[in-house]
Length: 323
Ligand code: UT7
Image 1 (cartoon, rainbow, N blue to C red):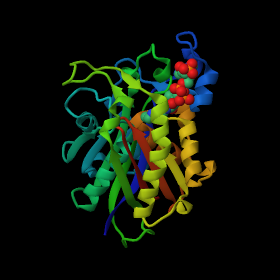
Image 2: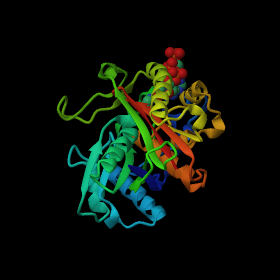
Image 3: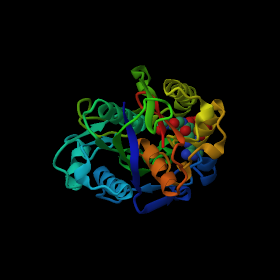
């Protein structure tokens, strides 16, 4: 059978780094509160005029370089974002043009913080169906643009950035020993919209809006739903948590990551952690973490990687792959 294997990863973080202390004279908050409640120490913010597609293009170029590939070899781009450059066209098409690619397809996926997991699962399905041989899957966000800077319960949490992964078709045995994406699990439940949403949009208000979140309620859903979707995906792959070499979770909150890992019986030294330096970059967080860890040479061929994420919708899911 055809499998989608990872050929390369890359990422880009905007130059401007903002430490927790930056918020202290603007809001009633502290470095200590942010660190102890979230694990976040700093985040990157895009420069004025620097857009989601700018970050995505740089991450994509880095992934192409690491894979030793040319843009002409790519058949399609799937970009996960909730902070597109424009209402339309899809940010993926702006990235496509920026990369000098004028064939194939390019479209966006909108599943907020779970966006990259949804994009990866879609790219995998398209590759297995023979729709494309090589897909560039990108998560790119400029969440700093939808922050309410007077709301201390949200604006200290998020950051900007982009990560990219190149998937390539490969003939495989069709067993859990294969390299590449082995299984995924995707879920949404729209009745939880009020827990995490943006209070503006094209059709509803004609404005962009700001992010609103009932953090402690999202937190409770996160721990329960992430462990459950991860187990489902592992089961579909014919694997168990004991087979996992690396958990590469959505980087929203160190306490959520730790609780989920604990629930699955995974020690923290098997978990890729970037939340301290990146904050929550929504759909960009998993490809950023993958690229950072890959760049450090932490994944060995044959390693089983488990990614999981939850975000607005609520939408949540997991992907299991063999490196
Ligand atoms: O990526 C998408 C998914 N999103 C998430 O996964 C986020 C999930 N939620 C969380 O990570 C956590 O719920 C937060 C980090 C957002 C908040 O942590 P918490 O432990 O759940 O705190 P809380 O919301 O229950 O608030 C505790 C207290 C409150 O004060 P009172 O009511 O106890 O007096 C807040 O007003 O902390 C206060 N607080 C702050 N204090 C200082 C909230 N934000 C801040 C702040 N600085 N920045």
